Amino acid sequence: MKRIGATYLGNGRCTFSVWAPEKKKMFLQLVAPENRKIAMQPAPEGYFTLTEDNISRRARYFFMPEGEEKYPDPASYFQPEGVHGPSEVVDHSAFPWQDQTWKSPPLKELILYELHVGTFTPEGTFEAIIPRLKELTDTGINALELMPVNQFPGSRNWGYDGVYPYSVHESYGGPEKLKELVNACHAHGIAVFLDVVYNHLGPEGNYFEKFGPYFTDKYTTPWGKAFNFDGEWSDEVREYFINNALYWFETYHLDGLRLDAIHMAFDLGAVHIWEVLSSRVKTLEEKLGRPLHLTAECDFNSPKVIKHPEAGGFGFDAQWLDDFNHALYVMLDEKGRERYYDYGQLEQVAKAYTDGFVHSGEYVKFRKRRHGVSSAGVPGEKFIVFNQNHDQVGNRVKGERLSLLVDFERLKIAAAAILLAPYVPMLFMGEEYAEEAPFFYFVSHSDKKLIEAVRQGRQKEFAAFGFNEGPPDAQAPETFNRCKLNWEKRKTGKHNVMLHWHQHLISLRKTHPVLHNFCKNDVRVNLLGQAGFELHRQAVGGQKHLLCLFNLTEEVISYTFPAWSEKWQKIVDSKEGKWLETKDLVAKLLPDAAKAGTNVQLPLLSVTVYESLESTKGE
Picture (cartoon, rainbow, N blue to C red):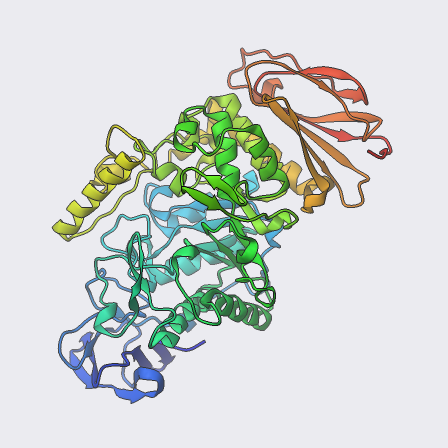
């Protein structure tokens, strides 16, 4: 890994390195604990370097291109005074790691949990997460996916306006506290993923162009200038971000990265940056002797994302499957069809289970063109599915979670749909107990013109989606504070029921052999009209079967047990009393056991799971 920024060597010795290929001079400006200006030396490939003695472990500094204005280090490890303040030297070797024997479970064994540090607890810090880890593990969560934590303006932000990709935000606790969180997670058996943004930088505090050609005018993104990954001087821009990925794995002991919107990183070179990045991560994986996971958000609907580079792919281990979310959501919330009008057929839900991509070359009205290619046959562990995430919730005017859009029975169906699926499931923080607090988009910029631009931009964005009202003010502290989780709700009433429902399904997923099989050839979906479906899964070798019966309507469905097994035993029933919203509700239950050919009536809005008991027959 190429060392850039400030590398503390010990005993007061530190090497500073910065890339500025078109500059003739570069100076280091120390500002604390002493104030002095030192000339740096030119180095190959457009770098300037300096190794200096008598540097404090927490010395603060700027770089001065051409000896003129001073700016923070583009590869700063810490910005304790914010995006405009000095960078701080960090001694990464000093942390007492205690996770030497830790190795992340395979991706297919993970239950991911997307978490925003600032709103997960009242304190909004890494440290405040640690006391809650046991409750997460008791639920079955074994992987946190932190929304971006790199330095952003102010103290409130989703993280996608970050401007220092190597720096850990000071309001969350900085580098030391992130390491403490990772250490604690590993002690609890929890892997840690980090959401990183390699397609743009936020506008405030973005001084990268003061140093070199990090950006290009050839392409544009919806959020700002595109990075220069294929033009003149692009080698070191690519190296900056590839090294960033390695840095998180090596320095912070992270287990996985989720790359934001990789389709917005443009590279027409012979070898795409994602190919290089994935190859370098695999090399580091061999060096460290532990799994390093790379996952991606991508709008292509193409298996290229998860194919090995030797097969013409980017080499990611898994990608988000938005189609699964959209296809299922509109079947649970009819109002959702107004937003996702290219979905609404139960056949699309079936395709999401058996193939993956729903849009695989069909004409899509939203895009006004054909979109996607088939992912049939791609193993299920290559896809991550969810009912909601920061985008699904935050890009609604009122920031409503699914718990406020559909009733309790439909929430249970949604949970079962992803946890019984042949994919890697992800929950959004609080989803496991039906949290009702909104999750809005929020910022805390200092530039008044930028604040107003954000306000107007959000208004226009929601108007384009057909919303008649605008979102709350993203800059207002109250908008942020309303997003804080109500953690204590998980212990009472319907929230506790939902928590135990998730716990039960996760436990089944982890222990039942059929649910360990991610081969798509062993997944079938039979529609029950347009009312529900039978998800049929089987173990490797076909000696054990599961029937997951979903009724998505408020009418009963006639169902006949198939002959794949002579006898079926019920193992999950969402209508059991312990899973009902209130104790005074009563529901008619399906039989505990049934023979092949038996006809039953599936209760309205229900999920029932049966496993095969006798030797199986051929289809």
